[in-house]
Structures are given as C-alpha cells and as structure tokens.
Amino acid sequence: MNIANLINDDLQFIWHPCTQMKDMQDFPLLPIKRGKGVYLYDFNDNKYIDCISSWWVNLFGHSNDYINSKIKEQLETLEHIIFAGYTHEGIVNYSKRIISKLPNGLDKCFYADNGSSAVEVALKMSYHFHLLQGNRRNIFLSLENSYHGETIGALSVGDVGIYKDIYNDILISNITTRLPKDSSANEIESALHSLETLLVENDNKICAFIIEPLIQCAGGMRFYPSEFVFKAANLCKKYGVCVIFDEIAVGFGRSGSMFALEECNVVPDFLCLSKGITGGYLPLSVVITSNEIYSAFYGDYSKAFLHSHSYTGNPLSIACANATLDIFENNNVIANNKILSNYIFYKFQELSNLNMVSNIRRQGMVFAFDLNGNFDRTISLKFSQLALQEGLIIRPLGNVVYFMPPYIITNDEVDFVVDALMKILYKLNM
Ligand SMILES: Cc1ncc(COP(=O)(O)O)c(C=O)c1O
Image 1: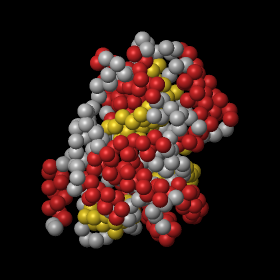
Image 2: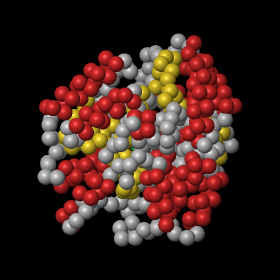
Image 3: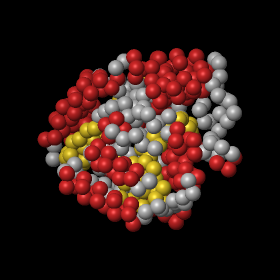
Image 4: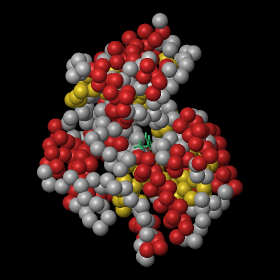
C-alpha cells in the first residue's frame, strides 16, 4: 500500500466531518489499517491506544472476538429488512432486554440509526404528543453549553456556538437555561430559579426540555450534579414539559452507572441512546418512551408518527447491540469499571503538578483536564499530532484534554497513557 497515494486520493475524493479541510496541509490524515483491543494500527504497523473510543462509541475494544462472531452469525441469516410492517427476532429480543434494564415508564422502543436522528425523533414526538392533547407548544428548552447533534433540530437545541451560530437563521425555536457553575447548594438553587422563571414566562409554550444528564461531553466535558438534573426534570414535569434525556454519549456505563438516569433518579419521557449501543461497530439509535405517550399516537392515521429511516433497526446493528448487552451481563462491567475508574483517576493525579494542567476531573469512565496557556485554535490539532508520536489517539476539545477509553483498557495501558501525556505536555511547553 502506497500511503502517500492513499492520502492524496482521500483528499481528492473525500470531505471529512467536523474538519476544516485546509488544516490537513499542516496536520496530515492518518490512515488506519486495523484495530485490535484498545489499539489501532497504521500502515507501518505503528500502534496507537484509542483514548477516545473512536468518537466515544467503542466499549469493548476494536475487532472484539465475541461481537465479531455474533455479527458473522447474523450475516449468514438476514442483513436487512424494511422495519415498517416487518420485524425480526434480534430486535424483539433486544427491545425486551433493554426495557428490562430501565425503570417502569420507559416501555416502548422507537429505532433510528444515529444519535442526531434519535434527538430528532424525540423532539418531533414530544411536539406531536402535545399537539395530540390539543396544545400547540412549539418552543424547546435546553441547557446552556449543551450539544445534541448536527441535524437542524438537534443543532437548534444545542448551544455550542462553533457548530450552531452560522445556521441561526434556519433553526427551530429553542431557549436555553443556565447550568449550575458548581455543585454548591446556592448554585443549584439559583440555576433552578432561572429555570422556573423561564417555565413561568413561557407557560404552555415549551414542549420539551432536553438534557445530557451529568456530563456535557462535546461542550467541554463539563460535569454537573445529579441533584440539579433531578430537580430540573421534576420542575419541567410540573409545568407539563416533556423531559428528554440525551444519553447518547453517557449511556452504557460511561457516566458510571449503566444509564445516567439511575444516578439522577429520573424517569424521563424520552430516553435517547446511541454510540456505545453497538459496542462501536455499526450505526444504531433508539428512543425509548412511555406506554402513555405511545397510546396518544394510537388510533387513526392522523395520529400516527410517520417518521422513518431506511436503515432503522438494521439486523446487523442489532446483533452487535445484543452482543454488547451480553458482554455487560456476563462480565460485571459496571462494577469492574468502578475499580478501573478509580485507578485511572489516581494515575491522572500525577499530572496535577504540571502548571499547564488544571481541573483534573472524572465522572464514571470520562476523565478530563484543562490546558492552561495562550493557545490558538489549532491547539487541539497540535496536541493530537504530538499524541500520535507518543502512541496515543487523542483529540482535545479546544483546550480540554479528555480520556474516554474502551472499558477493556488494562492498568499497564493506563500507565502508558499517563507517561505519554507527560511527554506530550512537556513538548507542548517547550
Ligand atoms: C450528547 C450527544 N447527543 C447527540 C449526539 C449526536 O450523535 P451522532 O453524532 O451519532 O449524530 C452526540 C454526538 O457526539 C452527543 O454527544
């Protein structure tokens, strides 16, 4: 394989996501040949630890033998079937299993094929649900600094300017409420007070409150207290506002529990799941809602939720999702992650003496710190390039360096990562 040709052809024919393509002149693409466990290998057989689980999706390593075997099995029987009017065994099984892991009130699965689509489904369903009750509530509510995806609806309820501002003219109505700055009782109360003011001012106009429980990931790995989520969700319910939990990034053990809603003690009206759902193999998402909401749509055609995606409920994706649940059930993953999380956090303290590093933090299996200094926009790319030299795939969000590894990472590999981070920070400081 001629790597230079591969890169040239890529740049000639491909437009990469979330990228200013011009940056590729200074920060070249890295073609990856294969993956195994926490490692990704380039065409020269250099190996890199996947510190970001390939955009937060990979839970149990690349080319996982068990998931591989299940996807191969599925491939021999059914690769795809239209999901309107037809069903398949895997998805019925999966739906029963996922619902058995959730509290009562999360009773019905509606499938889509990526995180943003799940958010669109939840937004549309919540609007439509109110309409079916005779209420035209056409404003959404979300937290400041939130991120829910890149499609127009999802972007509208997000609040990260770099992705959103340019499209302001074409977005749907959304208001943002404030995030507590810290976990002090005063801050929580003050943020809740702001929320209630908005709810009163917009009484009967707000259709749903969408929130990433416990962690704002794309917004810079900001953690905030479960108490706020609990009280904010209850306040919204008091004003008849549907609550949407976007657990696309934090579900499946990332937040520390299987689902963040357990830590927050909230049963949302809609739960959006994606990313880790297939262990990082194939696109899939699901929105889980209540029998009550489902029933409101049941009747003649005028009530039906006429939303679909061609690959909804794809059997290969579902085989991966079932395999992922098998691994959770058979390997005591959540309990083991707690031990692993403690070890990683303990090791990360070694970085705390560096002037460049502040605010080392963790929530479950998400670890982050801030880089102090006068950095320009390219800091993230510079950091990523230095990381490659040290054998890590890492992609800071601006000056926020985060570590979200596959759950199978070993203590030795964690030690390697922390040593490598030391070297990168040293070089960055030179
Ligand atoms: C919280 C959250 N919601 C939604 C999305 C969008 O998911 P997708 O990239 O699959 O469209 C993301 C993606 O990072 C996310 O972090």
